[in-house]
Length: 179
Figure 1 (cartoon, rainbow, N blue to C red):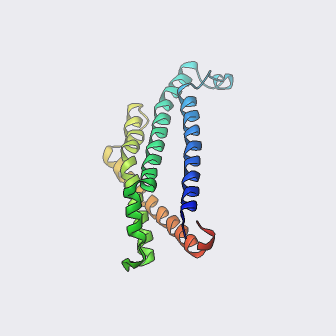
Figure 2: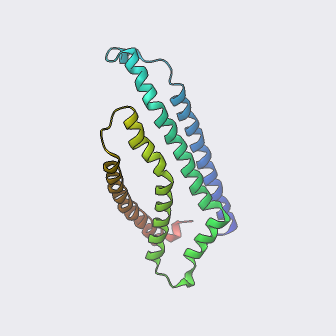
Figure 3: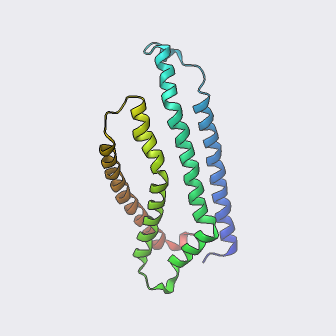
């Protein structure tokens, strides 16, 4: 049974993990924006201009990756800590709804997966299609990119469902060791 002390422990643990993640985000962004001098070992294989072009090519995707990560963490934190997120969770897990446990698990996984997939779509499109076109690294048409994207999303959905169901099964099976 979850009591106030356990809820406080869970929230404090999440706050600690989010703070730690924020430290790594800042360090990663610093290294992306201020990479330092080009190492001499790279100069043996690449010209100075090529190395600078590579840095320029990598900077935007690295920064966008961190922005995407922070926004995803904010979305998930909002679901976890907001009153609306708590209300939805309580409605899903209410024992008297008559909904089988596996349906609650699958629906919660699907909702979170759909939210995150929809949320990250602009980043995927920009970095996977547009940025590659700008730099001349892709000759793929936009239609072909969308086909590849939906194939990738389908595989991601299957793996997410499998992993989520295994997680829920473990939590249910070993519930006395869980919060």
